[in-house]
Length: 348
Image (cartoon, rainbow, N blue to C red; front, side):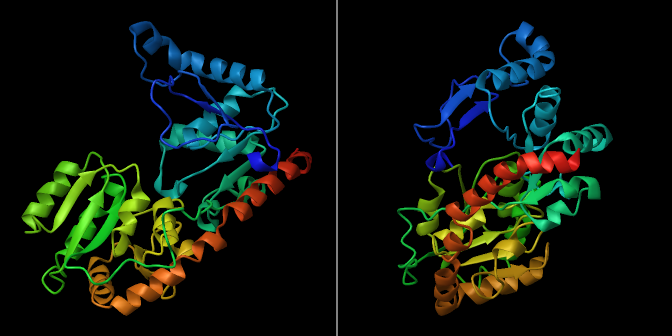
């Protein structure tokens, strides 16, 4: 969007003491507000929760934006609250499937209140949109995430199939919803019939100890590894032969898109929401019923044993960079920005 004449300012809640995980263009202004809930110092710890709306409101007024786009439900609520009475449009962006991200009655009620007052609500899939009331749906748009062709992912040259050891890769937080326990239970069913394969799960989280224990209990020690977080996931993907997504639910899984952009064959639970929108089953990936461990094992074994199938799926998967190109998605956002005045008139 910055290439199309839009000036972009990013307001973050942290204090700026750590560099951004993602590299930002020089044209993007980054302003840390230091309003995280857990602050250093007893006084700030007590006062920040009460000062957050005022500090955020002051920062928004200072920057005089044409539109404000908060991300994630709690930030959406705070931003709508902070902009009450300001003639500045707010586009609330949901990044998960709200059906599986329950907030409790109080916060759920506040979310509904905020979304009815936002100029627009953006969700990533039609399934996520269906969660909300007709009133909120009328002021909503479906915009997927963009998928960028990575420079060092040569999609015309899929990963080699002639290696002593082949790698099944998974990437994500080591948390319950990512379903890595289900993946381990599926992998143990195929490890003997595919002895030249190993499973590498990248990520960190509160389930690490449980997953490591399950790995040992299933007799997978030496066949499964948990190397931690990687800042270069695409490089790890290009070193791998097959990607698997075992999540119980998603919003619009970027990691699945990145794997496909690298020309990697993919297998995914068809969980809500995202994978069914991203994967064209049997053409550029394979979908498995949610939570179906036995069927996941059968599918893994089939693809792991068939180098030709992996090559075909990977080649077709790379088309995702055109289907969800940055230019297409940026144009959808820009069209939304330009339509906001009309939406406000229609909704008031």
